[in-house]
Amino acid sequence: MTHTDDARWSRSLRALFGEEMFAAVGARRRGDWRLDALDVMRSAKASSTAGSPDGPFGAVTPDDFTGVFPVSRSGAEQIVTTLQGEWFQADGIPDFSVRGAELTAHAGTVLGRFGRDALFFTNAVTARDDPHADMLRRDGAYEGLTGHVMDCGVIAVSATEVGVFWGFTIG
Picture (cartoon, rainbow, N blue to C red):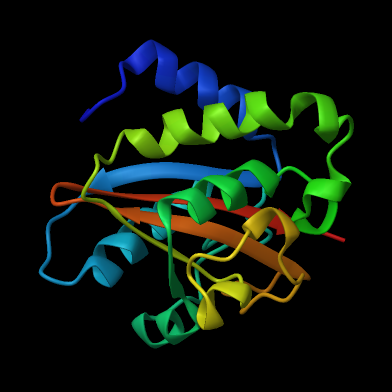
């Protein structure tokens, strides 16, 4: 890991991700980060959110990444924070006014693994027009990558790893 020890990173993942979410990291093996992200997504076959034998990302192809936009580190942290909220919004997280700073700190720990030079991508449409927008108060539109009612997430890319942190609205 780059800047975060294993125990701290694991604690932060547990604090942020529930059963309707996906968090996984894999090695960069190909020249195109999208193909590495796809490999990580396809590791989701055993996920409880799968809904199909191929997992939640089973039908995703490299062409689907046209609906993924660059986002700032701060924006990526905000999105990871909101994945547990209803419709992936800060307003949908119980006691967010009290817990928001703690949750955002956990998101910073999770994404800190990828180092200062990491790139971040999301399917939150707000990032298409402004990668530096306040993602806690973003529009609730997303370019879905899965067959779920709604999905949202962040892809973190470093020189050596790619991480996928995703939430799903099941019903």
